Length: 73
Image 1 (spheres, rainbow, N blue to C red):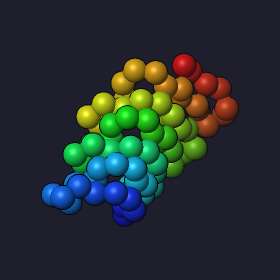
Image 2: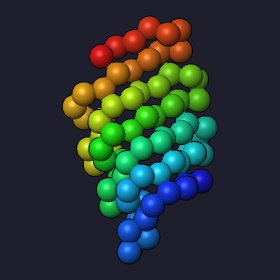
Image 3: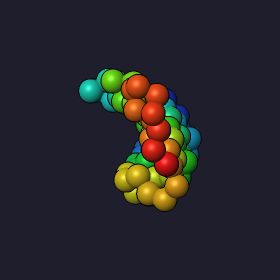
């Protein structure tokens, strides 16, 4: 399920929130259907990544938190 901005083609574009079929969630920026820019990805196990994305892939600066609270930058 997706809530957010779309472009004229209907692609996710701008700011949005997606609940994925596997239970994970993404909140952040999209460009032409891809996670792109700043975003927060929350895994169903409680881990999360808060940082930059480029064409759907983690890229650049970001922080990953493990379910036990430890983090990796």
